[in-house]
Image 1: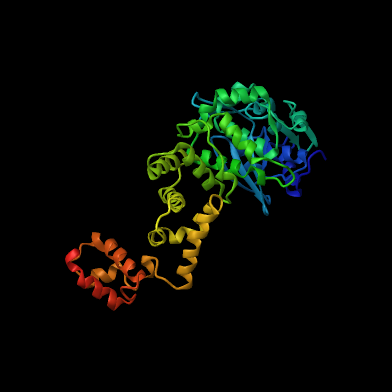
Image 2: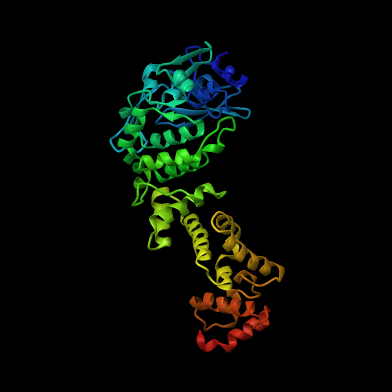
Length: 410
């Protein structure tokens, strides 16, 4: 066989005497001799007919995307994504989603909607036959990414393809054909049109491109350089088109490392406002996750700025493990300074968080009816400071007594 397929996939192909093709990354990776992932299938048979043919078989069928004519076909622990041959018509905004999908019986028409030649190689399972319209096998041998159809047609339609091009170049260690890259530069603004979720997903894959295939030597540095050369960052809400990369190479969490590099490059007046806009508006991160990212970076920068130990760990004690890993990539001296105090807190059992106090907001409410609930946080912060300094014992009776003494302040 040209391409090795599973026993389940061979059985599935028997339900398609006309044709059943594997296409995309699975074929590409099998020909490269590396780990193959998701199995994408295509044929001329519409999804209603496929569902009918598989009724009563060992295969389960679930509609994945009715508009695009795609099914998820499963058996045992294997799943295959099936789509009928189709034509895709795109608008002018490059936002990834076609405005219209038309079914076709023609595999040539189906091939025209695919991005790069190496992803456009079809394998006919029943005939054990490779179908390669755009010389993708040659490009695999040359380790080159090239659009199958004219690059202007491919990259104008969908901004996500430009990020995918960068990611694949990194994952596979491929070069990018000259005209394909120049065209990507022309249409790079289309990256701004795709959803934040898709941008974030592709960027995460780009950041770990050198980890994708153990058989391939890849370079994160080279891949990130491509983002600069395409001025991608200017279409992700940054004033600058290029980022000075440093921390992204030094820390385990590369997304946080990249955020530090972006902040260091942009130098925003307000870190919190900048991150909220960048992460929520351009990557669709939730408020909770955006806030947590801000906490990590604020803890990182406040440590570098020399914030007092007590004040620092009142704010960042719970996030110290992550902040420590970031500081390890920047300053061993600062990391060691704050970690010494962190260990001291643990070894001496110091009360460092409001949750460690033997009193809660409900206790304040029950015992002091006249105190405005808006003051509860202020009261607990004050008690925490006094307990930490040894001025008040961390026992409910003593804490309530301390509040009683200072009622005039609340």
